[in-house]
Image (cartoon, rainbow, N blue to C red; front, side):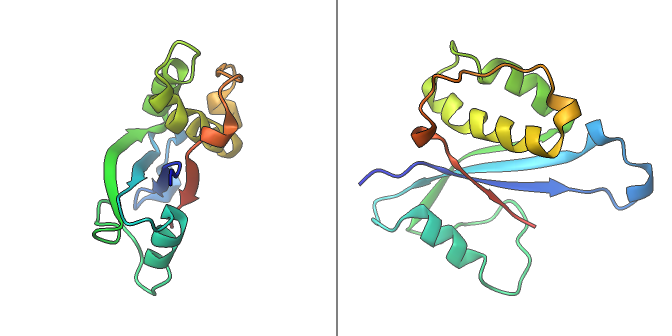
Length: 135
C-alpha cells in the first residue's frame, strides 16, 4: 500500500512579535513518509497530536510507524527562493510532491510574498503531500 507523504508545517514566531519582518518569519517543514507498518500516515500523525502537550520540531513521529526523511527550516524569504525553482516542471517529481503543496499552502497565507511564482500545474495533485499545520 502506498501513501503520499505528510508535510508537517510549523511557523515559528519571534518573542518580540511587534518588530517582526514577515520575510524573516521562520517556517519549519518535515516530510514524513510511511514505514512498513501499513498504518496510514494521516492516522499516525494525527494520533501524535491528540495529546495536550504542544508539538515542537524536531521529534519522533510514532516510532516504527513512520519515518522522517526531510527537514526544512527557512525564513519566508528563503522559502520563496527555494519554491521558485523546486515547483517548476524541470524539478524532480519527488521534490515537486513536497514543494508544490507547500507553495500553495504558503501562497494562501502570504499571497503578496509568493506572487508571481509559477508552478508545474500538470503535476498530478493526487501525488501532493498532505499538509498538516502544527501549532
